[in-house]
Amino acid sequence: MRRKFWILLCITIAIFALAACGDKEASTDDDNVEEELPALDVQFDVPETADLNETIELKATVTYDDEMVADADEVTFEVWEQDHEDDSTMIESENNGDGTYTAKTSFDKDGIYEMFAHTTARDQHTMPMKTVIAGDASAEESSTENASDGHHH
Figure (cartoon, rainbow, N blue to C red):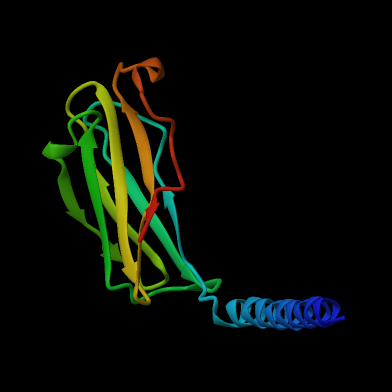
């Protein structure tokens, strides 16, 4: 009789413990939805190809919570020849006042060039990446596609 009592008591405690855990998980999920911050989004536009010494435009369109960001803390373009990231060049953007940031560059030798649009606004940083094929370089030489998701911090 005493053994049945202890088994029944343990089962009852286990049921209450599981029920309490289930309620806690439900409230945690609700809290996460409410605290989720909008993400900084950068649409980075560059041509896929460029002629040698042709001036091209680098353009970043910055939004936060679907609203244009005309006052980003930083929008800087970093450009390098593929596999030579240590030899990159930083290009300051021009703030057009409407959520777009632009700069111009050109390439003086055939190659595949990669670039980040380093963007900081609303206490977030993101750096989408693009690739431009300059001159007679072929797409087969590229070890990366024209990536648009980039890196987020």
